[in-house]
Image (cartoon, rainbow, N blue to C red; front, top):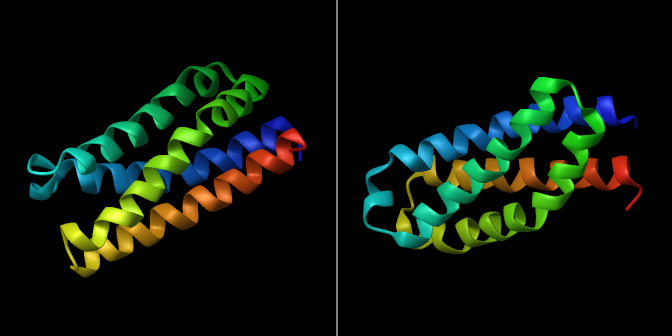
Length: 117
């Protein structure tokens, strides 16, 4: 997989992460739960960090940044998976958790393939 192909695939997956972030950011529960707010901030940080290399077309820099930020993204995903049942058992929260977990897993695999690790 070339860096450009990886950048395209990762950016597609970031769109899913961004939608989960938006859902969390605008839910009432985020005002009452510091951990949920932290998840929202980490998702934002990951997506935001990829903006400059994406805009400049720097595929290698994009993949490098994604790899660098991946551990925090995984931790935020694990935290959301852990706290989601306590926050709400509503289908929207369940699907947001599932969507985030799947997108991050695919993103991690893409980074591994693109970087050879």
